[in-house]
Image (cartoon, rainbow, N blue to C red):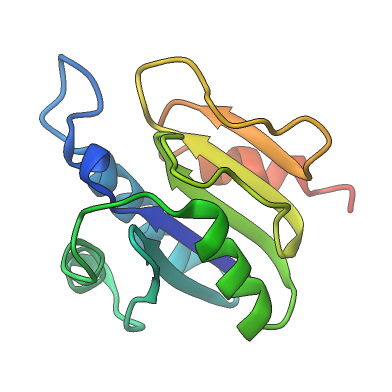
Length: 154
């Protein structure tokens, strides 16, 4: 099982870069659509003021579900990950798409592997060393291919 957690806070309404029209949360949604198709089991969540599970949809429906899941306000990543850990079984992997702006920091992933994908155009802000997270800076649909390669020897 893969838990995919997309940051939909206010800062994620910004563009990926000055040369892109794609918003940060839309990049996360696009990756969620792709993962939904290639993972044997995938549950999609968003976080802003709290954690919210998105309906098990595909394609554009999933993108809309992510965009409309909750108000794009605060950034409570640690609290959202704690809710995830308290309510669900441990996952094979947890993938978080964020710009690493958070009000409450980060906690270890509730999974065998944790990937923190930073789609912000500024320096990483969350401490991942020793916390069970692998940081991936930037966005590309090839992240999925990289994760598959990374996990081949497990």
